[in-house]
Length: 291
Image 1: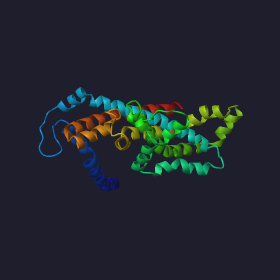
Image 2: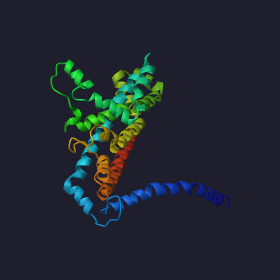
Image 3: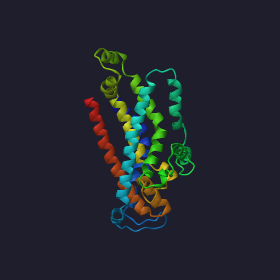
Image 4: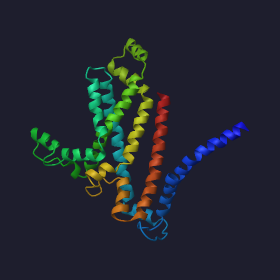
């Protein structure tokens, strides 16, 4: 009886959270799938049109172009973001006199809001008066460096801004992981003849497996939900060269008033991101066990 009463009390506490989850998470997802099968414009009535929205997205190339851009953006954020954060963490872990100062400096970008960061980098990237333009002019380059205005560079230039902002957070996470490695392990590596490079490659990095998984998933989530920097810096352009899934959904819904098509793309994005995230998480967990 005591166990039954305890379960009932626990259920009472669970019900409000469960109701909140169902109303504000499960219901919108299900409604998204439903409206993706209609021609709803966001206001008024709608008609059930089946899979026409999905066929339109495939025929026009919007779906695959947005997915390609999103994957490219996410890969850059994950790979470059983790490489630079790990490198900074290794430097800060060397116990230099100025390490405390540089920890603060590296973390400062994470304190700024997205719009502030985008505003700063819009001047850095400005083709005729920006910081990059001035630097290239000093080295004798006479042309313009319009990274946000070219199809080949706009997406990665925007992704770099996100890695600049998030590098501080990732660096702190890596630094915490490095400082949790027992000193006895590093001492054993030195006794066995490992120099700084070997001990980093064969001891430190394998022992950071859990930390790497955390940062990879953080980068993946940030890359897949990429909207704010795209919106602020490129507007999905030039053309659709930097239009990601989230930006395409926003544009269809709130600019073109095609909520049915936007909901169809949102449903595809949900399933795609869920599948990729699960696959990456399983892969990273296996690598943790191997390490």
